Amino acid sequence: MFSTDDSIVAIATPPGRGGIGIVRISGPASREIAARVLDRPQGLEPRHATFTRVRETDEVVATYFPAPRSYTGEHVVEISAHGNPVVLQAIVASAIAAGARLAEPGEFTLRAFLNGKRDLIQAEAVADLIAAATPLQARVAFDQLEGTLTERIAAIDGDLFDLIARLEASLDFPDEGYHFIEPADAARRIACVLTRLDDLLAGARTGRLIRDGATVVVAGRPNVGKSSLFNRLAGADRAIVTPIAGTTRDLVSEHVDMEGLAVTLVDTAGWRETRDVIEREGVARSEQAREVADLLVLVLDRSERIQREDEALLAATAGRPRIVVENKSDLPASLHSAPRKPAPTTPDPIEISAKTGTGLDDLRRAIVHELTGRESLRDTAAISNTRHIALLEQARASLDAAQRAAAVAGTPEEFVLADLQAARARLDEVVGTRTSEDLLQHIFERFCIGK
Image (cartoon, rainbow, N blue to C red; front, side, top):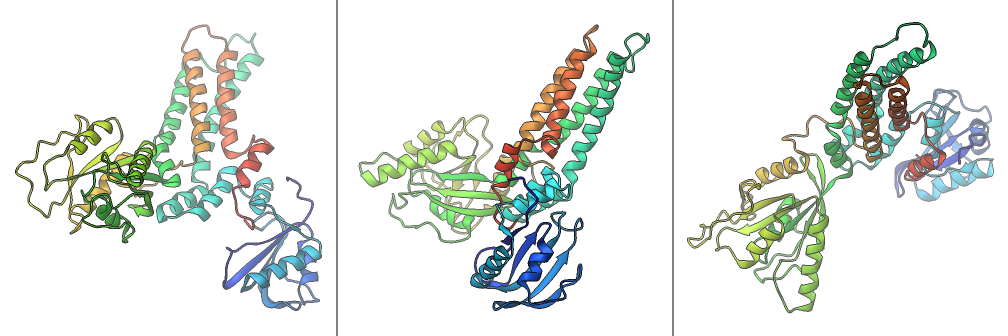
């Protein structure tokens, strides 16, 4: 998988038809392969878009990027043709006949990583940018592609390197009668590194939610307005709404951009005891959905007195992240409503009207705040990748152990040094300085072919 001796080719634009499609060739023989494919005897000038033809296929614009100033760091030729899959596949077939190999998923970006054009954080950010479903996801991915996270980790790594060098020097010259760093100073400097790492990890949960999205389940007994609320939040009539109790019998989901957060919104069957086999299965699926949800939106009907099913749901979800919503604020509140006591730690219910839209903006903000702990997501998180978060948490644990060891009088430098080196190794894994081939294969196989 990691051979870069051959030249690879693939379609670099998404499947389907469009105005333009791009075929990318990368590798040591890419220019020669392009010369065999294109009807242009004099070859391509570096960094000049050249109008030419692919023999018996299409009129194209071809651009040659010599190494190392290309996306992959190798010689690259990009051929822009009409975006017809038949045409693009024919160009790929011609390139393969001329000596290229069909690229594996992510192989162009893998070569960029192996050739030092991207570190591993930036390479993973390429996949995140392509997969982004909201502007906020795209912004976080682009920030990482630009190297913001790499710079912050490099600064932490630089402090660790200096500290490790001083401790190693103390070990190398044990008879000099002095240390290159005193234990108290080592403990203080480790604490400073820990603070910087904690600052980076502080936004980890929010960053993960921005990158991976969240699942929000709308729950409640029948006819409280769950499906109407779902449709309002989804911005489309996805769920059937009728006055008949038990209309929703299966899970209905929709992907929603909520204040920049990618939310999978799930409407569920109304919770109640029933003898109807189909509705009972719908209720069972609703219970399963509630168990895996990142957040529950529990809907009550403020125009009616509280029901036994409402009380049961409030009790069953008391220990879960949730928002309690009182729907139908456009109607008079019931004079016979019992006091609603969701739970001592639950914020006050939010009053809304799914019919008129009143209170929905407050609900959207509450959902984002409950998921992320932030009032606004305007300031993006620096870290969002689960792999990065896990490695940085491991580095933090090693640094914490090193600080505790350095604070104990008489602790040999070797003990502190071992923990610091373990922490630095985890940082190296984040940026890809130390990475196994199996991990690289796992990361890059998630990419699309052509990227």
